[in-house]
Image 1 (spheres, rainbow, N blue to C red):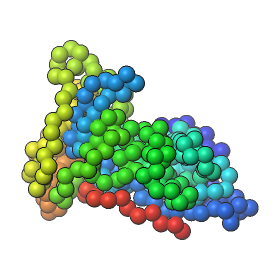
Image 2 (tube, rainbow, N blue to C red):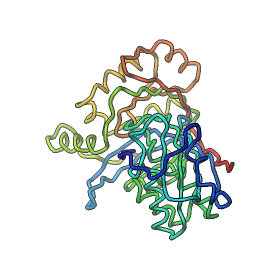
Image 3 (tube, rainbow, N blue to C red):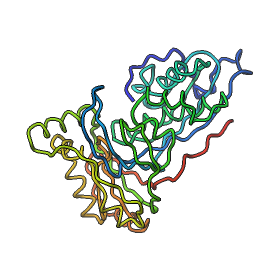
Length: 321
């Protein structure tokens, strides 16, 4: 979620931006509260580079309970995003603002939106937080205009914003192909419990893919190929055997990812994996009690943050206030 601070509206002190919409348009404003879950890549196969500069991927995505919360006012005047405590994320470059503009471009409908984004999902972490925030805005606009989120215009707007946005708009376990927008139902996943470590550094997708291209070009990594996902994943142990991420080794060549994995495994995690392009690493558990034991014994380094989460089977509800 990059962006310089350039919002055209500012919330009054003591109020959220959504509460600070011009009172003259109050009758036309509708307000929503929506949860934007993060995601993890349980598998990530990076395939050939496409003519548009993106890579083909094949990935088993799962939404998780670690989430941002958004207050969204549709109506009023203009597009603005406030992120309390994170002014560097505010402004026109925020993916929430980009989602509103993409919705307008694809549908031709009114998209005055004021967003107050309460961040919990780490940034530049491989968890899709910015993409999920954008998808949350698209869900609010769809509700406001009585459109299904499956509408082809909204799906196109999602992809205009970013490759992960179609998945988090749908927000249920899926196998993603293409840039990430070609979604097929995933096998039924068992309950999964995660410990997520965010190191004190971020990783951009561009950095991760450059490192992958370099290592493959030098013959240090094989060319990408899609590995099959079984039709049935009966338990966490079966899923542990599937875990993989083609971007992990390239990112680990630049950043201390391997040490985070080693500490999770030493503390009792059955498996650990970097999510997406990093920098977060998660330990995966089949039982919450095992996760609790690991969380009490894991050794964190200065600047690291620890989060607990579970996988989700469906998108959280959207409430109109």
